[in-house]
Every structure is written in C-alpha cells, then in structure tokens.
Image (cartoon, rainbow, N blue to C red):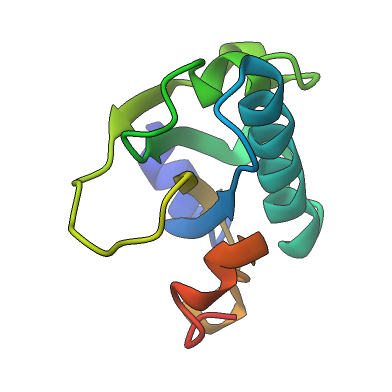
Length: 132
C-alpha cells in the first residue's frame, strides 16, 4: 500500500502549522534559541506531535537576521536530523515586523483544520491574532 493510501486509511492528512517568533538580537545563539523554542512550542501545542509525523519545515527570516540558519539549531533537537528543512528570506515589506522567524511545518495528522494550534511568540503574536 502506498504511503498516501496508508495515511488516508489511518485517517491522517497533511496539514500546515504556522508559527513565528521575534528574536532579541542578530546572533547565532539568539536565533538558535528562538527557533528551538518556537518549534518545541508548536509540537507541544499540537498534542505533542510526533517528529515522525513531520513532513517538512520551512523557515523564513527577516533580512536583519543573517547570523545563522534557524534549521541548523532545530536539527539539534532529538529526532529532527532526518526532517527536511529549508530556510529562506522573508519579503522585506516596509513597516513589517523586524527580527522575526516564521515557520510553516507540514505534518501528517488526524487533526482537523480547526484543531490545529498555530503558535506566535513574543512580538510575533500581533501578526495573526485570528489564529491564536
């Protein structure tokens, strides 16, 4: 049985979980701590989501965060070394929130869209008040 058919039989579908966090300073340590904190909060908020259910993680950072890749720090979390991750630069919109890491985590889950808990920490909480 193909993986997709197996997931449907088990009641799982792929869903996206959004998250964001602001970082106090543009350092490797600050970016790493913030990225790990955000990802761990996303897992916890979503019923302690199993790492095996994570399909991939996309990070974006604002242009003022260029000291480190968030994915590098997240790979240090147990089990994440095999999760496909990618980092990209966020569009530099005038007046947008600065020093911000955003995340889109794709997961296989039985949760419905309304059950997904999106996580916005620090000043990033103002980005999507409708989701939190």
